[in-house]
Every structure is written in C-alpha cells, then in structure tokens.
Length: 290
Ligand code: KIV
Image 1 (spheres, helix red, strand yellow):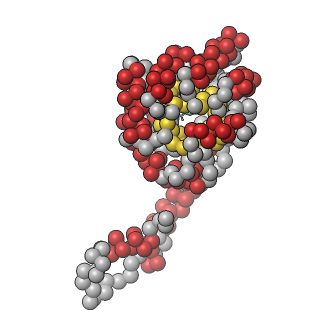
Image 2 (cartoon, protein in one colour):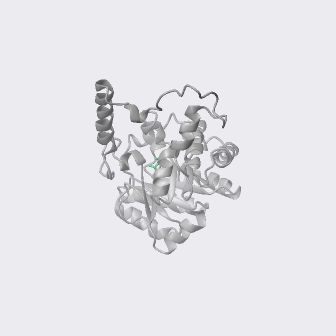
Image 3 (cartoon, protein in one colour):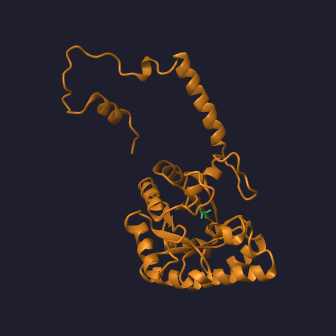
C-alpha cells in the first residue's frame, strides 16, 4: 500500500481502512486482515501508557513503537504520528523529527495535527520527500486550547475555519487528511472540496475512509465507548475470562500437564549435536511459522 495507491482509491471511490497499531503482533493481525493503513498514533500515550492525554508522548517513544509495527507489517502503509511540539518549534526541527520516523522508525509517512498554521511546515517536510498526512477538526494535542475533547466546527463560522484548515494542508502537499470530531455534513463538504483522501473518526459516513484506535475496535477499552466508537469484538472480557481460567487451572494443578512439558532427561544425552539447547530446539520446532 503506497501514497499514490491511496490517492487512486479516493478517485476510484474505494474506501480506505486505517487502524492504529503499537506493536508487531497487532500490526501483523491488522495487516493479515487487509487493513490499508496502520497509524502508530500518539494515542499510545492513553491506551498503552495510561496517560490522561497524548501530551506527554515523545518522538523517541513513537519511533520505538513504529519500529515494532513496521516489523510486523508486510502490506499495509505505516504512518508515524508526530507528537506534541515535535514540529512547532522550528521548520528545521520538524524536518529532522519527521525524517527520524522514516529512517529509524521504518514508517512510510508522518501525520501531524494542524491546519493553516501547520501548512508551511507541511510544505517543507513534503519537499524533503516525506509524505505528510494532516489532521484537522478535533486535534487532541490542543485539548487545553479546545477546553476538552470537544466536537469542532459546530457553527457556520467554526465550520469555515475547519474547511480553511483542510484546504491549507491539502494545498501544502499533504497526501491524506484525518478529520476528527466534526459534524458529518462538514466532513462531506471537506471530502468534496479536497482532492486528497479524507479519513474520518467521529466525522460521520461521508469521508473517503475511516480510522479507529485498535483497542476500541477490539473492545479492549471497556470503560470508554464514545458515540463514534464501535467494538467489533470484546477482547477485554474474553481476556479476563481466559486469565481467570488460567489462574484456576494453575491453582488446581491442571496446567501445566505432562503434554506441555519436555519429558524426562535421557541418561545418555550430552550436548545436542546441533549446538542448540533443548529450549532453543523447542522454540525452533514449535515457534511461529513464516
Ligand atoms: O493518535 C491517534 O490514534 C490518532 C487517530 C485517532 C487519528 O491521531
């Protein structure tokens, strides 16, 4: 999945699927499912680190998770999210940080939250050959300026501002645009106004694609179910039930049984011929395929 292919999907009316991922195992799961774009979102601050906002997340942390996601991905397009203050201080710092997501993180593009104010920086990063996905509307890194995680663009004047932001980032060369937390009709207007794909979250059904935080999609955040979220599984409940079964079996002595062990020590065996230890051989024999 590439930047030009995503543009073609919009032109062909093919909807784009995007999910966040933070490690190699989840990346593999979504890649295998045929998800088009994996976003290593700064939402990791909330769902992985347990913070109350995305603000404490650092460039090094997102790059660490990017590397893991890139290793677990074969087909999907991997995007690294530029965290709070990683692009605003100066264009030089923005460019250097953006480049690290590709050279160190293995991402194919970066995402940054910002509209008109971010346009010159986006242009600079894009000119350096780094594809930029923009993000307008409800931008969680501006949580304090917005007075909370609030839907944006609800009045005609506010909607015009979001539309101006969208046009500015598209003109600056962004290849795709996340629309978060805005009314559905505004998302539709923006989707029709810009040539680049729009990817919605809390933006209704008229965008060119959709993104969900993977923990929400899989039902791993049981206490948090805002209106725009849909659980496609209940992994948290299933995980608790599985962990309880494990606890009960270990306590009862039912697990591990002989079938999970490696038998008895052979009296005659010395060092294995292969040079591998018994545990290394078991890992090789029973480890993941492919
Ligand atoms: O960080 C994130 O997960 C995001 C998506 C919600 C778009 O920015």
